[in-house]
Length: 96
Image 1: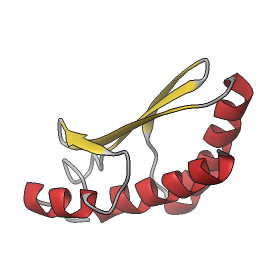
Image 2: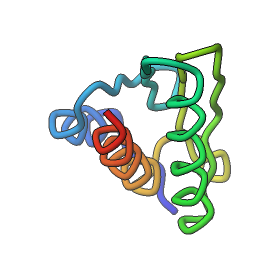
Image 3: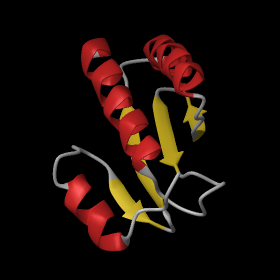
Image 4: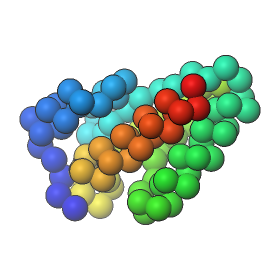
C-alpha cells in the first residue's frame, strides 16, 4: 500500500471528524461513560481490525481510549488507515 503525502492526508482529514495527523500517524481519543463502555467499543473495533487485517496502536485507561493509526510496512499513513479510522468513528458513534 502506498504512503500518502502530507497534502493528501490533510485533504482526507477534512472529512474525518476528531482525528489529527502528526508523527507520521493519525491520532484520536475517545472518552466513554465508564470502563465497560470503553471495553465494549474496543471489542467491536477489534473485529473490524481483524476484518481489515490492520491493527491500531491503542491504550485504554479506565474510560478513555487513545488510538494511533499508521501503516508500518509503508512507513506512514495509507488509505487503509483512513478506512479503519472511518470504521472506528462509525462504531464509536453507534456506542455513544
